Image (cartoon, rainbow, N blue to C red; front, top):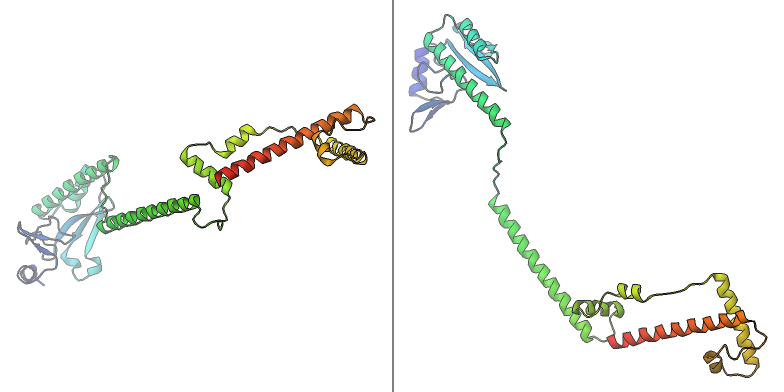
Length: 285
C-alpha cells in the first residue's frame, strides 16, 4: 500500500497512537523519532524509517526498509550503539549514509537528548534524596479510631480497679475475698506513701544466727532430759518455761546450762516476733 494512502487513513480517520491535546497532536508510538504526529515523523506512513530506542540503559538504532515490508517479524533491523557519544555518531553516519538528511538529523538530535537524560539519571541515582510517601486517608482515620477506643478501655479498666480497691478497703462484702490481706495492706500503704515496701523491711529487720544440725539435736536432747528431771521433782510447767536454767539438777554440766539458756532466748524472740505480726494484721484489718 502507498505511504500517502496510509497517511490519509491515519490522519483523517482513526489512529490508536494519536493523542490530541490543547497544545498539539502527539504520537505514542515507541518507534516515533520526534513524538509529534506529522507526515515525516510517522513510522507507519513511511516505508523507509529509522529511530533510536533505549533498552535498560543501552541504545539501539532501528532501521526499516521497503524490502522487508512483507515480513513483519523482520521489519526492523537493530544495531547496538556504543556508550561513547562520538562512536555512536560514527555508527549512525555509517548506516545512514544514503538516507534523507532531515531524518538523519532528527535521529542525531534524539541520540543527543537520550545521552543527556542518561547522564542526569546517573547523577540522580548517586544523590541521596528524601522519598515522598503517601499515607492513605482511610487507614489513618481507622488508626485514630482504634487509638480512641483503646484509651477508653484503659480508662474504664482504671476506674474498675479503683472501685474494687475502695470496696476491699471498706469491706463491703465481708470475708468472702480470697486475698492475701498482708500484701494487700502493704500495697495500700505504698500508694498512700506511708510505708516502704515489705521487702526492704524484712531485709533491714531480719537477723538470724544458725547453728549446726548436730548441735541443735544435742541441745534438744539435753532440754528434754532437763524437763523430765524437773517434772519428776514436782515443779509446774509454767515455772519450767519461766526459768528453765535455775531449776536444773545440780549434776548437769556447765555446757548444758549455756545451751539451755540459748534455747530459751531463741523461744522468747520467736514468740515476740509472732506477737508483733499479729498486732500488725489486726491494725490493718
